Length: 397
Ligand code: APR
Ligand code: PHB
Image (tube, rainbow, N blue to C red; front, top):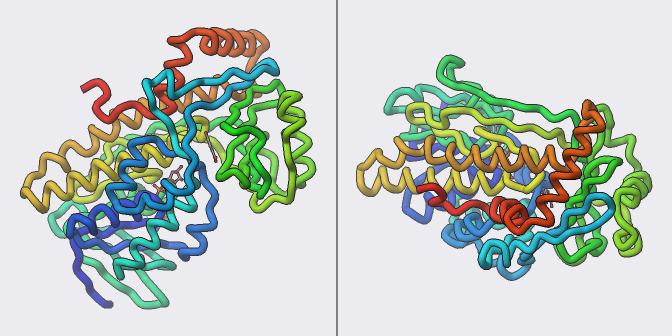
C-alpha cells in the first residue's frame, strides 16, 4: 500500500469538492481530491444552473468567475404561470436590486476542473473502494484503490463532498446522526436542446396536467422540465411526446414561440427533501449534497453547496492561520441555519406548483387561491423574490 500525507482529503469532485479545493489552494492549504467517476462522467451530468449572488461572489473569490461573467446571463425576474396566465416576479425591484445568474453547473464544474489542472493539482479520478477512517481522532485517514492498487492518505481533516450516495455520511455511526427526509410522489423529466429558449426569463408553470419549467443555459440552449409520475421511464418519452406535453402545459404565447429540436439529453430525476444533522463528526465535515438535498423547484441545491463550502473553507483557513477552532466548531450550526430556510422554501414552492396525486379538489382550490394572493400582493411577491435570490448571509444575526 502506498502512503501519502495532506492537510485536507476531499472526497468527491462535484461542485462542492472542487470549489473547496480551489479556495483552500488559494489560501496555501494542501488538499487531495478523490472522485469515484471519471472527469468526463462528472461533466456529463446535467443539473440546474441558477446562481445566487453569494455563489457568484464565492466563484470570484476562488478566481474562477471570468467565463461565468462573460457568458452567464443576468436575470432580474422570472414568471409564474397558473390558470393559463403569466405573472412576473420582478426580483430586482422587489429585493432592492438583486439578480440571479444563469450559468450551467456543467460549465462551472469545468471552470473549477480547469483551474485545478492549471495549478498542477488535478483530482484523482476513477477511484474504487474509498473508506474514511479514524475521523474521531486527530489523525484521520482515507483509503482507496486506483488501477487495482491500494493507497492511504493521512490527513488533518476529511471533507465529505461526495453527494447523497457518498461514503462519508454512510460511515458515521447511526447513533451520532439524525436524518430528516421527504420523498415526493413524482419526478422531473428534463430535456436539453440547442433551441432558443421560449422566453427571455424562466417560466414556472402550475398546470392541471402537472408542473412544468421553461429554463435555459444560453440564448441558444434551452432546458425544459415536465412533472411526470415516478413510474415513468425516460425511454418511454420520445422527444416528440415531450414537446407535445410541454405545449399542452404552456399558454398560447408560449405555444407560438416554442422552438423544438432534437434532445441533447433527457433524464428523470426524483424529488426529495433531505437533511442530515450535524454536519461535523470530529475531524470529518459533510458539505453539499452529502448533507442535504432540496427538490429543484427554486434551484437552491448548488447555492446551498456553495455556502457550506464558504463556511468550511473559512473555518479551515482560520484553523491553519490562527490556530483557532472557532470556525470548525460553529460550522454545522451555521450551515444548518441557512439550509433549513432554503429547504423550507424549496418544499413550499414545490407543493405550491405541483399536482399531488393524493390531493382532493379543495386542496387544488387552496393552491390556486394562494397563488392568486401571492402574485397580486406586493409583500407576497417579495417573499418569493427574496427567497429566490437567496437570503443574505447574515440573515437573522
Ligand atoms: N468516493 C469518491 N467520490 C464519490 C464517492 C466515493 N465513495 N461517492 C460519490 N462520489 C462523488 C460523485 O461521483 C460526485 O461526483 O462525489 C461527487 C458529489 O458531487 P455532487 O453529487 O454533484 O454533489 P455536490 O458537489 O455537493 O454538489 C451539489 O450538485 O447535485 C447537485 O443540486 C446539487 O447543485 C447541487 C450540487
Ligand atoms: C435548470 O435550469 O435546470 C433549473 C432552473 C431552475 C430551477 C430548476 C432547474 O428551479
